[in-house]
Image (cartoon, rainbow, N blue to C red; front, top):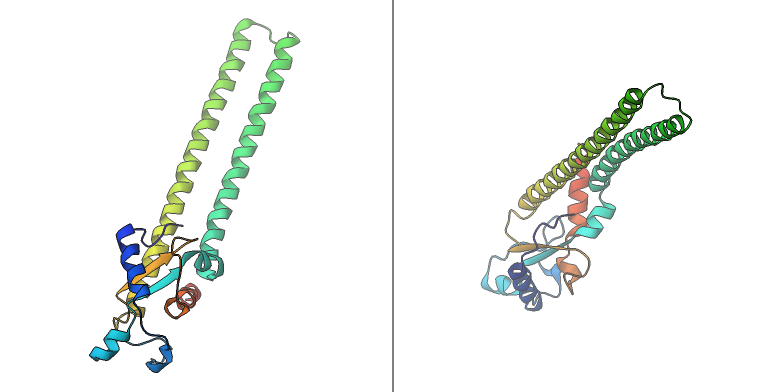
Length: 200
């Protein structure tokens, strides 16, 4: 899945911010949703951590929103694969039939044999075009899904962070972020938000 951001400069800035966070007890300043609220004083601002992290792997694995999107893509891919396999099997059977007929002298004339061979070549070209089309369709469907997911995550995060508690929200996938304080991992909140969106 395409990351929300993979900019090296942004990751560097985020890692610097993470190491400089002084807030150890997020319960000192809590909103109704359980997250630290934006600082209103100099002291609060000094203790606030301006970075949040979303674990993309966990999001993809646990969010019903993401799982449903992946399921739809897989269903479409399986349907295409079945069509491709059926067309491929028919071409193979027709080629075997052609070879047997040619070897047994089943064609009444050279023209008949050449016409049958031309039909096989056309069938093979159509199969190749079909494969290219479904690959393009799948790439387009995947891109549309990823774009919608990214837009929905961005819309959720904009609302989620409308009080400005975080200055930077970065994506984490695999080990591209070496350490994350659990206090700034908002993955569960994003999963919950997307799942609510999925149920609408």
